[in-house]
Each structure stands twice: as structure tokens, then as C-alpha cells.
Image (cartoon, rainbow, N blue to C red):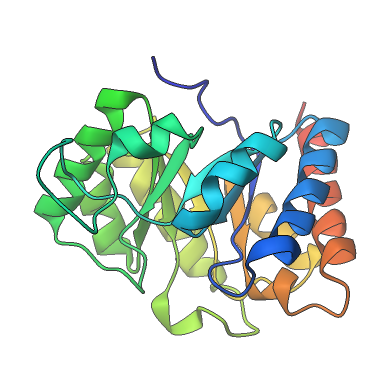
Length: 231
């Protein structure tokens, strides 16, 4: 059965491979506490080897895999199956990140495999044109993120944010639109939400902050406040 669908506004903590082990778990446990406190959908991504422990220790988070392969259980090695992710409590998978690009055919096949076992998908798109094409594949979330801004101290331009949201929703109104890249403060989070993003995803803005937990909390508080004002 599919998991409960991610609700907007949502927040994605994406430590990539900056954090592992106890440091990663500590940040996830704090995010888990904040998810319960603020009643928000908080997605937390992690390397494959960390997913089982995070799922066990952080029941309020939507544990998210950094990748998945479009395979069925059987005679393969070194690849990540939908069934193995589902089995350890993963609820969402990221596809087509700039660090792990996929062909359109691979994206379509992997979205289909994810749906078969009840996993939700976040598909990354660099340009407005790519976002339009990928919206037709019916992912749950489209992450509009210019590759040139990943890891930089600059969020996407107002025109890019507005254009991607408008074009994605025009093609597929069921797709949630996440904005990422260059988010360094709670002010950036609020700006993107005010421009119409359904959610935001943050890496460097949290893991490279002087106090990652405090920065994460400030960003999550902004999302919670935005939700309250929108209601």
C-alpha cells in the first residue's frame, strides 16, 4: 500500500554524504522531534547504509533514499531495489539528482517501480523545459534546482521559481513543486514559499551552518508559520 502522500508545505533535509553515523543520526533525531512538535511533513534523505537505523529511530520523519534502481528482485548485485527500501521503512526516493543523472526512460521505469511498492518519488529537474517533460511522468514531487546553483550561496531567481512552478502545475497540477539550491537561511525558505513553492530542500545551508540544528529549526519554524498563515 502507498504511504500517506506528502503534504505542502513540506521541508526536506538533505545531508547528502556530508554526514554519516552518529552525527547524521543526531541531526535526524532532532528533525524527528521538530516534525512532531510542528506537525510538518519533514523528509530526511540519507545514504543507503543509514536508512534502516534512521527509519527505526525517527518515526515522525519521511525517510528518503538518495537513489533507487528500476529493478525487480532477482539476479542482480550492487543495485537498490524498491522492495529493499520499502522493507526498511523508506517512504520516498530521490531520482535524477545532478550527482546521479538518469535518462528519461530510466526515470519513467523507476517511478513505475516505486509506485508498485508504494514509494513516493522526488524527481530533480535543472531547467524549465526539463521540468515540463518530467511532469508528464507523474512523480509525486518535482525538485526544480538549477545545477549551477547547487552548493552556492544564492537561491534560484524569482523568474526561474515562478516559471518552473507555473509550467509544472500547468502540465500536471497533482505534482508538488520543491525548490532547492543555494538556500542559506530561513529568509530564503520564506521567500521561496511566498513565491509558490510547495516545499524546499536544504543541504549546505544546514550542514555547513555554524549550528546546524539551530539553523534547521529556524527553517522549519518558518515553514510551520507559513502553513498557519496560509490556513
